[in-house]
Length: 248
Image (cartoon, rainbow, N blue to C red; front, side):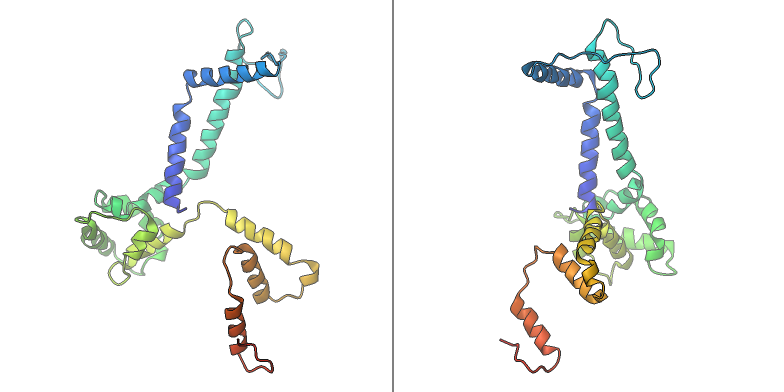
């Protein structure tokens, strides 16, 4: 999954969470919870309240209304915390990402150079040295944008756009599309690599060289890739002359 697809999914999730933050949705969820509680013989009640609370708030409830209490103490705080986490995790650099997405052929026809400028300013060190803004603007408006104006089937993801972006004609656009293609959605892959190294590099393998350790780690991480043993044996045998005949 590329970062563009992930961000679209995040935006859809945020919109859905915002749409269910209302009284009608809470009433449906609360009634379902009460039905499940009745099936196991549990009666919804209010927790004990005292004058001063240290670890939770005393919510204002009239006549022992459980519905009002759980709406204030659980439903709305949970949704607000979830929305806050989504925004904090994914919205911090969303303006840069959104600026990069305007380079996609499916969006470039309706975009301007000012839409892409935040990404250019942010990644200017990765672009060609001593490049003038006018040249970048010309590359975007007169070359890249013009290329897709009359096209019907336009790529809507970075990898497909990158395949149709020759470096000879669009050197800076290609760099930005590369960045958009390799932006990670999560850090799970990197975390898994650390766990793999911890399992492989035990005290019995302290003398393992870096090349061998990297090879073992890659084999363990990418275990879904089928390796032809015969090809590996032929490569090993062809490195130099050996006493044994390894080639099949």
